[in-house]
Image 1 (cartoon, rainbow, N blue to C red):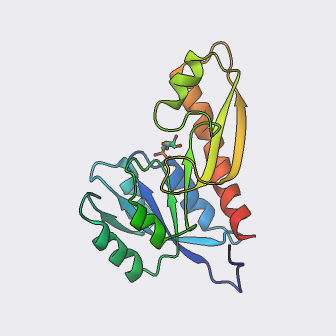
Image 2: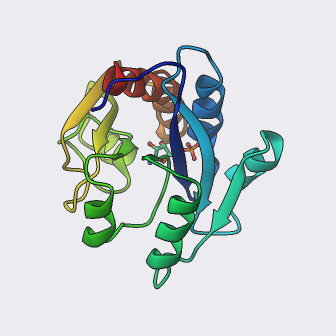
Length: 189
Ligand code: GRF
């Protein structure tokens, strides 16, 4: 990935579908001097995404697309805002091959499991059901194959005997908030 030159931060869009705790966390990280990225656009596939409130809170532009027939419009928006990098954070749509190609190696995602284990949904219930002793989260590049792109960083956490779906999801999310900024730092430094 290109090295940072001077003080210019890389214009980044974050794609969300839900609560946006990673979004909130990455925005806060992006405001630190050391951050290589600035968050210039928030994209959601639904008006209901709670995370959209951070657009107002932090005065960041937001766009809502249904993602079925909207890719041309999305690309136009990204171009207009000079977006060079995309972070998926709890984004529940699958991007088309064509879209991914246009942002080749410039889209990353966070996934709540130790990939390649548990690609797709319901990662925590699968880990509990299989009586795994460890779980974690992974930041990886987005490719046309779901949750299969090159791993950038991964962090592990123990699953305690008393853990349930809620406690495990909370544990992993806390870890995600450390991992995502660290992965961004790793890419650009
Ligand atoms: C996170 O666990 C992320 O790994 C998964 O969806 C969740 C999104 O959480 N893909 P939030 O919207 O960032 O709070």
